[in-house]
Length: 374
Ligand code: NAD
Image (cartoon, rainbow, N blue to C red; front, side, top):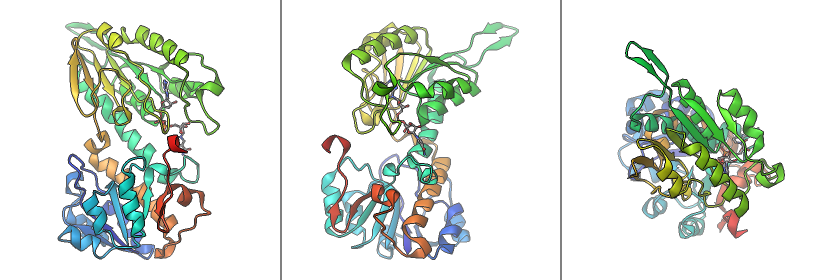
């Protein structure tokens, strides 16, 4: 395949889809690689590093798109970018498949094969390609640093000549991949951490990271589906959960929320009343902002202060740690490319569960329907 890597153009996006480290393996796989000039610069990868790894540098986006039968991206292409993709080519990225149906129809009409890395199944075989997990790891880590930076107190306990400082209390809501990384990071810098999730199976993982687990008995069948993913709770369970969170929130210095239910709007778990009952100076980071937010007062993409509580809802947070976010994403993408185009030749094998899950468009059709629409 002739692989092309354009510079990302969405505002605030600092990641790049391919890093020099993975170039040699893709070349050995029988591909050629063209990278747009300065595509990796905002993530810390120079043109020289790509060149030394064996890639060719193109001066413009046109030089990349025009010569590629596979485009590797981070963000979903804009309509203008989509029109530059050659007819029948492949585009791989975090394509946000539930949005912009018109764009996917436009790609399908030109027989472009659009592969969305968010749709990689959470199976053992697909682990190396699991971009949701790699980017959630980055998001969880960075969320703790944002909170620590905004908090007017220390995270760790300190015993100093000026007396003892008590450690910060962090409450984590949702202990999936991002939440577990939040726990690990907050513990490393010395906070006392409590975590809450509706799936009882995560209790042991939470405890093994040194946090205590806040329990709400909703029953295994109510909490998760056969695949191990969280289910939407009943109104009664959500009401009980909000009460429980309120009780713990008023003791906390920091709350970091990561609760998501696949294909649904994020559950609203922290009410305005809870925020207003927290200590002034407390900080909330709502990592579910892109899916509607877990916190009633949070505004996606903004920081708001209400009753002395700072509420942040960062978007594309993984892009704020672009070096490692790009490195991990590029490894995920390279593993997927090796499956989709072994020995440099496209093998659109729809009987492979990973390829079948990831292809949003193929053979002229939009194949993906958002979960709610099934
Ligand atoms: P996610 O980002 O979809 O959700 C984050 C967390 O929010 C989940 O733990 C979920 O239980 C929790 N949540 C949902 N509703 C909630 C509520 N009302 N209150 C509190 N918490 C709530 O999750 P994820 O990190 O993508 O992981 C989800 C599943 O995928 C897990 O079963 C995980 O083990 C599995 N997984 C498997 C693999 C693999 O095998 N390759 C990799 C990663 C994740």
